[in-house]
Length: 126
Image (cartoon, rainbow, N blue to C red; front, side, top):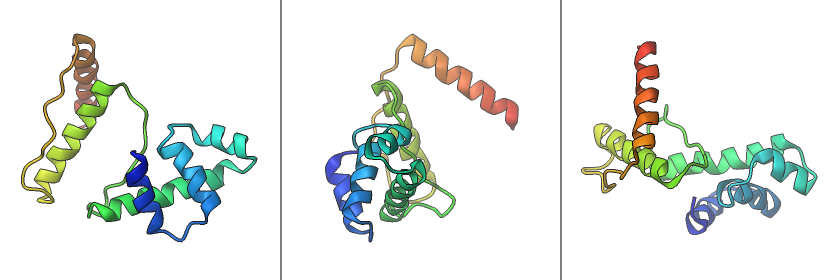
């Protein structure tokens, strides 16, 4: 998440500065909640609660369906593009946007292989 987007969402909450800083370390800086908790001598639960509060605000801000939820993850750039593309297509299906502006990701052969494997596993559950 970009810092500017994070700050806009944080302003909409009643979180105290300490909690906002903890969530920022996770959502903007990409640190795990365990590391943030240890570095700041607080419980991991506190870090997770602050992070989840910001993520709930993100879901509200983007007018997402109730059953959707926001997550934070760290991935290689091509996989981030895949996730953004999927999100755009799902938003189109839900009628939340008219046309997704995300471009089709430029993937390596190993990226395609990984996604093919993931889709295969998903289909087994259906």
